[in-house]
Image (cartoon, rainbow, N blue to C red):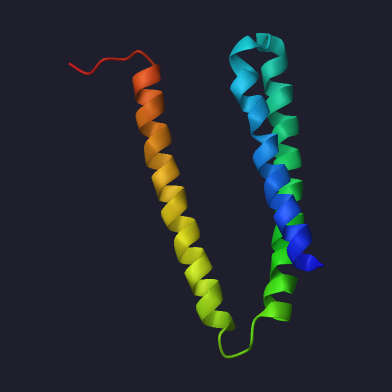
Length: 101
C-alpha cells in the first residue's frame, strides 16, 4: 500500500532526527560523519516517501479533486515549516546564550 509506505517513511524521517539531540555529547571529530550519515538517511527516506506519496495521491484522489488536495497539503506543509523554523530560531537564539543589548 503506497500510503502505508509514505507514512512509514515520514515516521522514519522523524526518528532519524533524534540523534541530532545527542550532538553536544558526541566527540568533535565524530560530529561531521554523524551529521552526514543522518542527513543521507534522512534524504533517502524522503525520496521513498515522496515517491510513495505521489502514487498514493494518484490512487486515492479523484482526478477532479487531486489538484485541490495537493495544494492544501503543500499549504499546510509550508505553514508547519514556517512555525517550526520560527520556533527553532527563537529557541536557538535563547539557548545560545547571546544577549542582545
